[in-house]
Length: 297
Figure 1 (cartoon, rainbow, N blue to C red):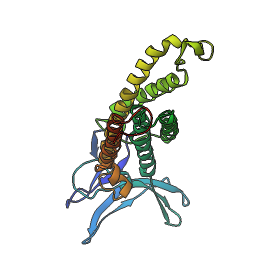
Figure 2 (cartoon, helix red, strand yellow):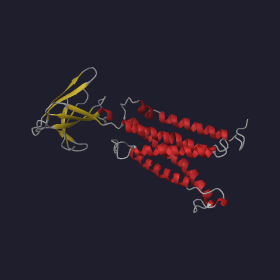
Figure 3 (cartoon, rainbow, N blue to C red):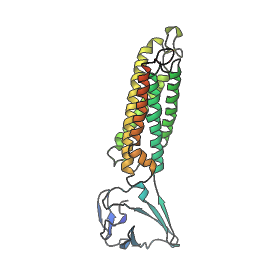
Figure 4 (cartoon, rainbow, N blue to C red):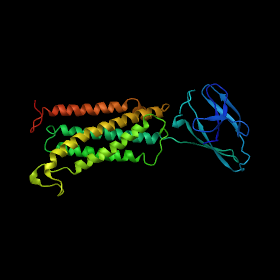
């Protein structure tokens, strides 16, 4: 956007015309400026910036695109995505088409899916491994694998939501790079954990090597690695969700969407507390469960 021209109306002051000369440097738009006669009209509920644009090279039927952004405050901060976009103006008809680019839907769906995967299904699946007496006869294992499988599918969809998309806070938000980096680590650890589960050694030597090449005497080492990687992966995923919630809160400061408010204003933490409390109660009750016959009374 170097050499582009813009009009800035800040607070109650008169608009100022600028020519952009870099990311952080601008100069007054002097002679030869396409913009002129900028002024602001105000009502009790709104302010409108009006200006004149002249382009001698434009044909009668030409269409020109203009970028706009507005803010509810007077501070020089990044505008929320719901308050900026483009206007395509047809010089012949005078008609204008306004387009706003918003990533609210994508970010909300991604955040909710991540919360379901790593805030609900994965922790519950991990928690069932501490309820073997409460859920005997392999019921805990069926629940464990089922919950993890559902959580994994949701996680894959959450990742796919971001494929090919750019985020406007990239390079500007202090947590963005860390959020993305830890997210990549979670993907790698999740893949490793899934492979550990799929290629687990048999319990008994008599059962032979699993798939013909995984010795049963690796079972203890496998159990240690699987039991260690699970909490570590969920812990890092929790960091990803918390930093994501903070980024969403900062990104959509002016948003009234209920989904944004849920993700940004404590909903994530409420889900964490509820799910982990449920797991803790189940593990506590399991201590009083008999190997056969249910709970002691």
